[in-house]
Amino acid sequence: MLKVGVLGAGHLGKIHLKLLQQSPKYELVGFYDPIEDYALEVAAEFGYTYFDNIDTLIQSVDVIDIVTPTLNHFECAEKAIANGKHIFIEKPITKTLQEAESLRDLVQKNGVRGQVGHVERFNPAFTAVKDMIENPMFIETHRLAEFNPRGTDVPVVLDLMIHDIDIILSVVNSAVKEVHASGVSVISETPDIANARIEFENGCVANLTASRISLKNMRKSRFFQKDAYISVDFLEKKCEVVKMKDAPEHPDDFAMILQNAEGNKKQIYFENPEVLQNNAILDELESFAEAIENGKTPIVSLKQGAQALKVAQQIIDNF
Image (cartoon, rainbow, N blue to C red; front, side, top):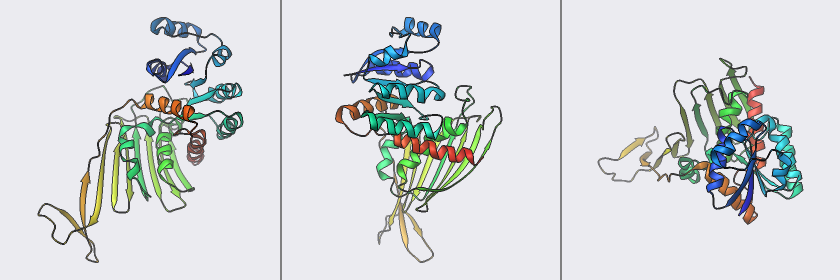
C-alpha cells in the first residue's frame, strides 16, 4: 500500500481524494490546499486530514498527487521529486515545455516515477478498440463543451484539445512534420474555439476541433486506416469498427458489397466491441500504483505528457 498525499482540493482534487481513499492500492495520508478556510471546510465535511504545510505532507508520503492549477504544477512536482517522491500530475503536465522537459529529466535523475493525468487513455470506449487502431492515415476529432469558467485560465487547446492530442500521439507511430491552426477568443482572454491540422512524417493527417462555448457536449474521434474505420465516442462510451475484406465469391443476400473502378469487390463488416464500464480516474491512479510496485513505465509517462504539451504549444503558436 502506497502512502499518498494530494495537492489541491478543488473540483477534481476532491474526486481524487475520494477515489484514493477507496482504493486498496493507496493509503490516503492527507491533503494540502493554500486556501486554508476552504481546506478546513473540506476536511470537516469529508474527514480527510488537512496539512497546513506542503513540505510536511510531502515528507509523510510515498506519492504526491498534484491536482493544482496548471501554473503551480512545476513548483509542486519539482519539490516532490527532490524529496524522492513519485508524482501523479494532472494534465497539462506544466505551463511550459521547458518545465515539462525539466520534470521529465528530474524523475529519471532521482529514480522516481511520474504519470500525467490524460484520463481519456483509460476511457473504456478507447481501451476497447485501441489495439485495433493500426497505422491510421486520417484522424478526425471533435471535443465540444458547454461554457464553464473553470479551465478558462488557459487556451482551449490546453484545456480540452490536449486530450485528443495525447490520444493521437499514442496511436500514430511517427514524428510530427507540420502543424496548422486557427483559434478564436469569444468570451475568454484566450481562444475558446480552435481547429488544428497535424501532419505526420508517415503521411498521416489529424484534424482536431475543440470548443468550450458549444451548445452541446461532444467528444468523438474517428480513425481511418486501410480497410477499416474506427469511431470512438468518449462521452457516451461507445465505439464501432467498420472493416472491409475481400468479398466472398458467393456473398449472402444481405451482405454489403462495394466494388471499385477496377472491379475489386469488398464486403463491409460491422463490429461493436464490448465496452466494459469503469471509473477512468480510479483506473489511471491505480495503474500508476502498479507501475511503481512493478518498476514499470507508467501508461502515460512524463515524456509523453511533454510530447503532448509540445504539440499543443505548436498549435497555439500558429494562431
